[in-house]
Image (cartoon, rainbow over all chains, first blue to last red; front, top):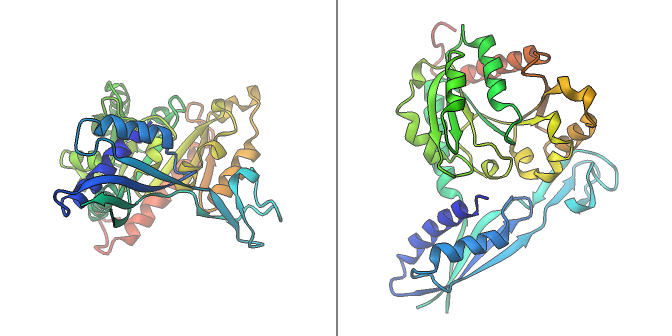
Length: 114
Length: 229
């Protein structure tokens, strides 16, 4: 639901970066989005197209790397994807779990044609 | 083709403003709670019931976030709170900037507690730090017992989860233990309280929790005593 707002925040970072490369064309934006970050990549791409279709970033590709939601059990040390479980560590059933990845919402890099 | 490295959180600007907000709140010595829940889980009813118990001795401000109307603000004003309504006009969450923009209209220096009632949904508000001390996720027994694993992000970020409408549990199929375990899996540091804002059970524990947090926040202030407390 908030993909439009995320998109606008992303574009402010993109604008600030592109200002340092006058005349360059933005080809690709590389993002990392965690599975647990509550961002739907399809909606984010839709929002991006709607916002940029008549501006300098028309046709720019949004490349989204999905990061799995991974937890690590503090008791036995096992790492596992959250889809595997609902109620704790699949090995020892401990509920003392640390989330290792899957909450990312990062802009990694831009590919530009100078 | 050239690659330009950025390596930033997309919401880094929001995070920056949230840090400013947090400093403003700390300087004023107020405890700030950001309340997040689905629509209809009882955020405003919890605020009303809370105000009934503390408004005589503590100065409470409420920042109400809603897509439209001032209905929630009217309800909490009637119970003795000051504050301000933010209408997001379709936006599904509050942001640090929206809070920043209304801070000048609030008398933070005289306030003890600020409640920020976020726009009702469990998804979008979870990723926006507003500068609060406590991120409170409110669940209600009528929503079903599968919420924590469906919305991991909010539970991972929350410091307190409150299960509301416990008075209805005898009439529902709701596995409270499962919910509490799922929350613990997502966030072992998240405290959990159970109450009925409407009927009053569990409210005393919540009020005690609030007072302890306020005392702890005041204790952190290097400026020392305010108002003789």
